Length: 216
Ligand code: SAH
Ligand code: DHB
Ligand code: MG
Image (cartoon, rainbow, N blue to C red):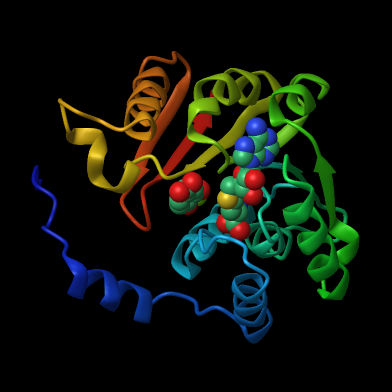
């Protein structure tokens, strides 16, 4: 048994990216167009997309809810891992982001699998039925994560997947003093996840940290 993780630095992450399923041309074009349109460059990385796709396929997920659409990059990636009847409902507060995402989803091979819902995720999640979602991916405002966790645990079915981006907060989650609001929010979220009975979870340290949990 090995108690210690192998130290992983920038060269190892480059190696990991080189040995992980690559981004396809369409998603590369979406990223470039999103940048040209002035959207922030905060889509998930290709290796995070691969991790989400693998987990959704293993889960056999059909009903996926995403919190934070931006340009539709992660929604399209996730939709591609679902069966023909699968659906991603993705929630976005910014109408400019939602409009960009809708236009690229319409051009994609998964246009019939994704629904963009515009509004504050707090309100949109509250309207969703309990126990009917196979996977939830949190990737919106970090101050909302603790509230989104409660709603995610409510809407997930037994054995449902809880996924969340940015749980390392750029590395700042291990800082004790002078944390940013984002780091404090992520510490609160990670603490709440760790304290949730009936949730098995791990932080996978790719990208800015990917929380993977399974509800009992
Ligand atoms: N998942 C996307 C990136 C999302 S970036 C991808 O990987 O491609 C975070 C997004 O969350 C932004 O578009 C932002 O406008 C949105 N957001 C912020 N606060 C929100 C809220 N309260 N409800 C819904 N979306 C929100
Ligand atoms: C930010 C948000 C994200 O979801 C992300 O992956 C990176 C940065 C941000 O708000 O700065
Ligand atoms: Mg993110």
